Amino acid sequence: MQPRVDIITLGVPDLDAARRFYLEGLGWTAVFDVAGEVAFIQIGHGLLLGLFGAADLDADVGDPRREGPHTPSPPMSLAHIVQTEDEVTDLLRQAEAAGGTILKPAQRAEFGGFHGYFADPAGFRWEVATNSGWHVEPDGTVFLGPVGD
Amino acid sequence: MQPRVDIITLGVPDLDAARRFYLEGLGWTAVFDVAGEVAFIQIGHGLLLGLFGAADLDADVGDPRREGPHTPSPPMSLAHIVQTEDEVTDLLRQAEAAGGTILKPAQRAEFGGFHGYFADPAGFRWEVATNSGWHVEPDGTVFLGPVGD
Image 1 (cartoon, rainbow over the protein chains, first blue to last red):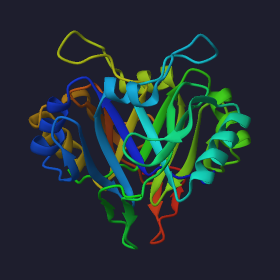
Image 2: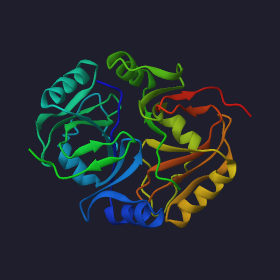
Image 3: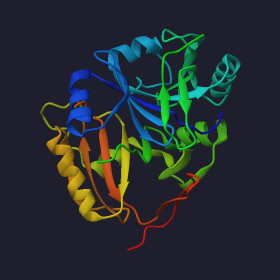
């Protein structure tokens, strides 16, 4: 697994409050915005900041918060975007072999891609996903459009 | 405040376990590593992942976890590095005006720079800091060396 974060998703209790702070307050611009659901802000070269409901994030992970070596996951996730479904499967296997815990096995994602989640030993969640709507220009600008087949 | 994250710091309960997972397990390389204290991994263009004790992070913030509109902060922080002390002061003021909460007013940092922390409405912590040891090459490679005066 390459050392790369593509999206930092903050799981917030109040998405409207997060939007007011980041978009209106700090004046940052969303590159992809579905009111009441999610907003993504370009926050670095090839890097997005996602604002997402904490409960929606938990539901997407399907995190069982089961008994085990892991503390409950902090309300956030880091996403690692790959090109193929095989990579999703392989990287989740690598993460598990490295001592991570699979929270969601590789599967079709609700947003249209193919994804899974693992947790590091502290419970931090990583999503590994394909996303056909994801495109990064050479200058680092991210385009996030509709996910096709 | 420019929309830019320079460091994603994960506050972990067991730094050795985090090091084993990311450095040994996933085979990622630390660009700056002080065993038992902190490790930084290049995780994107101009972007580092920091592994830091959760208690050490709390102590650095001096987060009073006071009563108020904010939930307790998740065990992580996002760092925004600037060139001057005046920028640190100005950006903390902007964040407060935008609806953020100042957790640590601008001041000399233990690591040698000048910094402060604010929380977004969900409690996510942002550090705004100068760091004379921070240098990013045009290709995005981060060099993090000793902090000078």
